[in-house]
Length: 201
Image 1 (tube, rainbow, N blue to C red):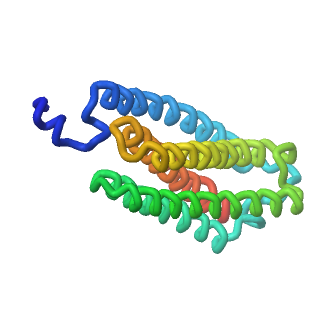
Image 2 (tube, one colour):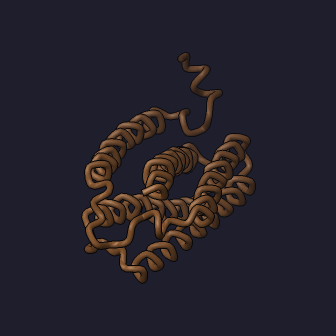
């Protein structure tokens, strides 16, 4: 890539620090992949070991899970639009779509918390069995990451409002976008490997 291509490219890539930060975050995501791979492997080993606790097929509700999936995947779409608006140089467009993304993320968390409370009332807790321990650790770790992502994005919104679109703020917004898309990909695996398979148990 020539120097001219770099200068005319996306704002987040126009400085050496920006390019190195994005590369470093990709390396960080590789570590996150290792973390979730370990959690999925643990879940797979403990699948079906429910002891005397309720079966997941008795508690998992297709409607609620589909709503959660739709909300999170939609938030990935709106996050992509936010990045597109940033690259167009539209501070207002970026802020608007990032706020919509945050609202969707908070809605997802609300549904997940409500779901966990329901499971607990039905007798499925992290202490109930090996299966439910694996489930709550896996889904809870993803939910914690979503929570951290929301807090991170709120701080970035404040920075963008104060400082505008600069190579530094653009780089940070682009990185949070990568993070958010990563969480959506993880959720697709949770939806298919945990909820869909659990419904037939």
